[in-house]
Amino acid sequence: MLSPKLKILFLCTGNSCRSQMAEGWAKALRGDVLEPYSAGIEVHGLNPEAVKVMAEAGVDIRGHRSKNVRELMDVPFDVVITVCGHAHETCPAWLGKKTALLHVGFEDPPKLAKTAATREEALGHYRRVRDEIRTFVQTLPEALGKNVVPPSAGVSERSQR
Image 1 (cartoon, helix red, strand yellow):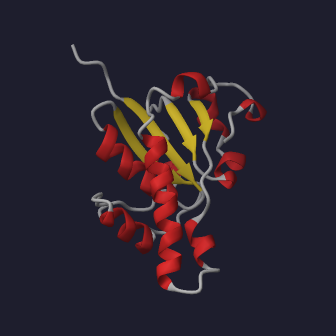
Image 2 (cartoon, rainbow, N blue to C red):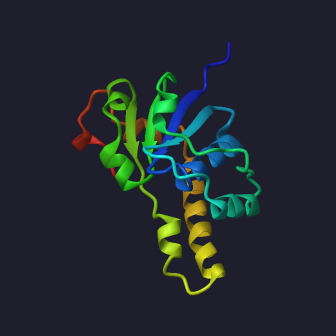
């Protein structure tokens, strides 16, 4: 009998960039053992630059859509991974009561891109974060064992990168 896939939620502020990249990588690289989802504390829409740089790496996330975490309340997640500080700090309490939590923060490409002198420089920020997320996702689910805070543990006990 096949063991069930680990249900993972990648949570970010607006579910537009980092969490979308993480979901895309998880499906592409670890879809045999993970059932990945992504959502945001808010909904900001799918970032077109994230779509572009993921396509460059061979992962198509054009069909993704930005979702509010409340849309996924009925999914029995095994792990919630916050990928930005705001989501980590404001993660809905109901998630932590029934799901293990892990924080692995990545820089915000849209914020970094605002200071770029050229579009190519801006895309460089997206590509770097995309590659950092890929490196992290490749360690899943094995890396979860020692870093996951069990359900009902306090926010202050969560692991930080």
